[in-house]
Image (cartoon, rainbow, N blue to C red; front, side):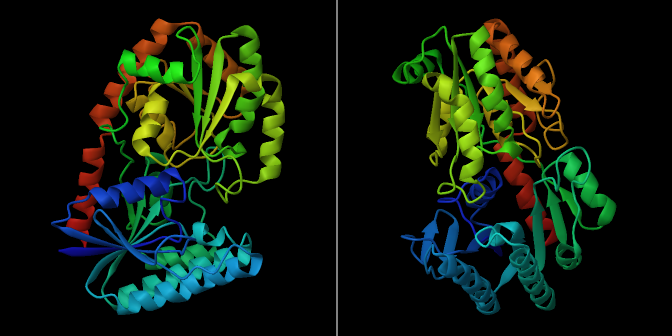
Length: 406
């Protein structure tokens, strides 16, 4: 049996991100007869220092608090704690590193990010000495736009030089990594839990919508992700009131963290501007917050009509694929990492130019006014995910990587 050591300061739950959720679920679902999974993660208030979750044996570092000083000490302790734990952990076959950036988020400065990369590099160096293989999962484009999907600085580059594999979740990310590290790049695209994210039957869909006061004649646009500019929420807050003027039966559901308490990626000052734009139409908007129950999330998503994600930067874009799996057509930005996703323009959903409010409005009104088009796209979207992005296939590809190269 091979032992996988997953290094991630954040863990789901309680922390939220599509990449992290996918990684945790995948590690839970790999064959327990072939793989043992140990997790070293950061301490969280009211979470035990050691626990089991399915196939995962989870260890948490000491938690000191959320004050400015105690927060820094908690991160520093995690670095020392995880290093010492690793030194005494036996029979490890592979270390799987989550993003170093995540470790630096509580401290919010460049020095902490450099320290995080140095910490990863030290672990990778020790792993090499101990003949333990290493993986880093690259899942987010480095900058907005069409270039720069992989732009390591001197600190991250030192780590990349030590790691054995850089696993990329899309064609765009793989091509960028391959240019710099042709011997390290490895592509495994995200999969979708297609046995969880499934189309709702008519009765279930009507029941959920009725509970939320949504009539059959109304159209529900749904946003899934962090309520931030990078995800395009500034465009949604600008465009939705205009769509409502032309199609008064429009509803907007927003699923995901929308304040700093729910996600450290969010700045409350930014969110207030979006809420001000939506204030005049607040009776047509519902913020669901973070939904941790994946089955419940799938039901809410499946009760919507159209998924909105005019994001500016992604590695893959898991939310549109989950919506497609539920039979919901997406409207998403045409950027690498999303363009090479499952969506097929005009067949399973629409693409828009990044940052284009006019194109977003046009696509929303097109789908709002044509129920037959929405339903036809939804059916094709579901089939596309089942055929090419199934969860079973995704897990099998990771098992193959672990089995054949470690």
